[in-house]
Image (cartoon, rainbow, N blue to C red; front, side, top):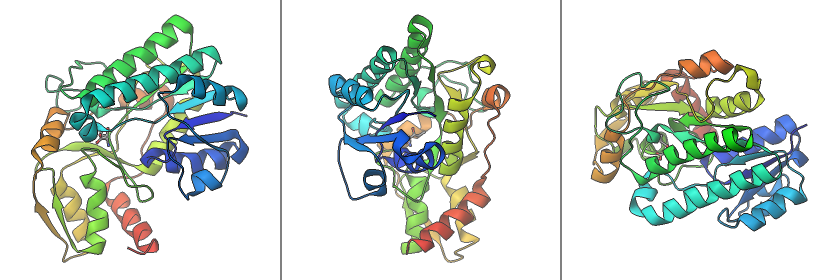
Length: 315
Ligand code: VAH
């Protein structure tokens, strides 16, 4: 049975992934870590340790203490924050990643870390962006993601570390809200629709980006980690997506449930510029061909489920 250390366990992906992993692999086999400790089931529901991923020695000590065989490295600054604090982003995103890769090398661990559609840039083909194509991102986050993809491939080729990763689109979830992302509008809109009946999007009408519901993202992580290595042609990182949408598409789907919902726009030039540098839609056929990726939720089913779950939480 896998013994997994998760960094960034209190983030948007981590909070839900830790719950899923503990259900699938056993509570005591999933060690959640984060730089902060809060009153949350991730902390109270199983092994939890404080960890600043820029402290490689502490990461090694924890991984050894729990005798982990898998590292899922999620701790990172997202695109908008990284663009506001580029040097902090480089030090955290790259320093943390190389520390995690070194621990995986030294302790012979399987390794997963997410990349993003942010790893593409303005010169990348905009529609049905292929798995293998031009990657010249114009954001610090994108530079971090491309560098991370190359570093993970290097650790596989040079040291035999079993590295695997996914280029995630914007992830929509109702548990932990995202922080500092360009696609955060697609999460906020659901909360605001229920709370206020209106939402002011910081991304402009007609701006298409790939999105995916969190349950599909979590399934993809586990499916990729469990995939037979002999089937993998690619590793770091696979394009995965469920839908390509613009704010008005999400608004129209919400209006089917909340007819009076009013979508307005107050574009944030900084995040709009990031969004415009990314693809409109990516092609995930390699993930499907090599390890059977298939998203279960589309915009309609995601919207129904998001609104239902948020209402259950009291929104
Ligand atoms: C961000 N949610 O907006 C992340 C993600 C594709 C977007 O990488 O930075």
